Figure 1 (tube, helix red, strand yellow):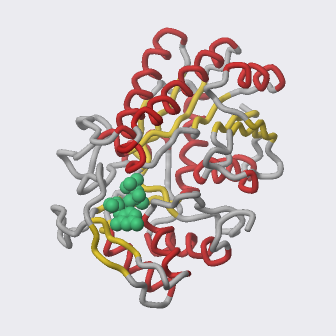
Figure 2 (cartoon, rainbow, N blue to C red):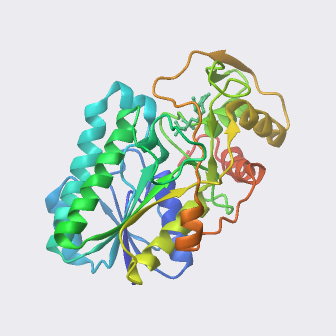
Length: 330
Ligand code: UDP
C-alpha cells in the first residue's frame, strides 16, 4: 500500500498524520477545504487538493488524477460545544462528507478506510475504563454524528466490502517534536492550548468549566494521548486491513485519567509560572469522566504509544505554542 489520501490533512490531527506517513515512506495526497485547517500545516512533500469531501466533482477529479490505495478520513468537525449550538452543521459536514466519500471510493474501487471517531460516542459511560463494546449513548451531536458514521461504515462494508478501522480517540494532545506543526484553531476551545494562551498573555484568564462534577477534585477527567501516537495507530490500522484484518473499532487512549485541575497544574509547572484562572459554569455536553481501555488496540494492532506520561505530552505542546503564539503564518 503506497498512496494514502488524508482527508483533512491540514488540520491538527491530519497534519501530524501526514508527517507520520511521509516519515515512514508513504506517498501522501491531502484533501482539505481549509475551513479549519491551515495551508502551512501541510507537509511540503504531500500533494494537496483544496476542496470539500461533500463535493462529488472535487473527489472525482482527485481520484481520476491519483491512484489512491487507502483513505484516512479526518475531515470531520469535532468541537463539542459548537456541536451543541449548531447540530445541523455537524450532521451535514460529518455525515454527508463521509457518504459522498464512500460512494466515490466504491466507484473508484478504493476499498480501505481508517477513520477518526471519538470517546464521545460513549456519552456518560457506565464503566471506567471504557471498552469498545460498552454502551454507546452520546450526549452531544458531535458524538452522535461519529456514532452514525460508524454505523454507515458497517453497512457499507457489508454491501461493498469496503474494509474499515474506526479509531475512537480520547483526548488528542501535544505536537510534533520538530515544533514545525502543532495545535492551532481559529477559535480555540481545547484545554491545553487554552491554558497556554493565557500563559502567553497574562491579561487573559483561564476558565475551568465546572468544579462540581463527580470526580475527586470536581473537575472533568480525560485521557490524554499524544498526537503522534494517534497517527502511529492509523498506520498500524492500515497494515491490519492490508493483512486481511476484519473491519473493527478500537479505543485509543493512555488508560490513565487526569482532571482539568491536574492538567492545569502540570502545565503551570512546565511553563514555569502561575497562570491566572477562575472557576466558570459547566460547558454543555461534557461527560464527567472519559478514560479508555485501549488494550484491544495494543493487542490486535500492536500499538505501543511512545508518550507514556502526560508531562512529556504537555512539553511538546508548549514547544509548539511558545514558538508559535499566534499559530500558523503570523
Ligand atoms: N476545559 C476547560 N477550560 C477550557 C477548555 C476545556 O475547563 O478552556 C475542560 C472541558 O470542560 C473538558 C476538558 O477540559 O472537561 C477537555 O476539554 P477539551 O475541549 O480539550 O476536549 P473534549 O474532552 O471536549 O474533547
